[in-house]
Each structure stands twice: as structure tokens, then as C-alpha cells.
Length: 96
Image 1 (cartoon, helix red, strand yellow):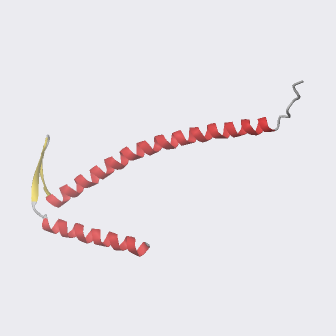
Image 2: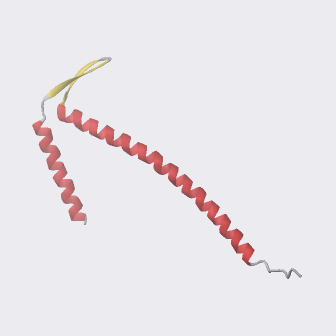
Image 3: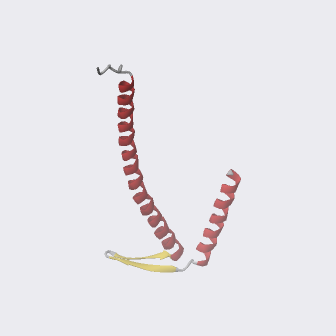
């Protein structure tokens, strides 16, 4: 399985390198304080990285909320199990 992962990573690196070579032209980025020339491949890679990071961050927030909910539910489950165990050990009284 590890070899398969390395093979996939190697193929992606080769594709990325080829993409960078084919898009070596510079583009001008205008922003408020000036302008800068950046290679197109670097700009696209930065956009992909920033988008991936923001997607990961939004998923992380959801995962943290779910972990918090899971913790609360586990606490409630432990409390309910303790209560059930306590009720099982109480002797039944005759109701005559």
C-alpha cells in the first residue's frame, strides 16, 4: 500500500512539474500598493493551496463541533449507565 501511495505522489509531482513548465509565462498582479509579476504556474498553485487550506479549515470547524457533541453524548451515556446499574441493585419491595 505504501508503494502505491509513493507512486501516486510521484505521478502528481511529475504532472505538477510538467504543468509548471508549460505555464512558465509571467502575469502581472495588480494590488492596492503596487504590482508584481509572478509566474502563472506559481499563481495557480497558490490559489489551489489557499482554496485547499480554506476547505480544510471549514471542515476542521465542523469536525471540532462534532467531537464536542460526541463528548457530551458520551458523558450523558455514562451517567445513564450508572443510573441503570444503581437501579438494578436496588432490591424490589413487596407491595402488599
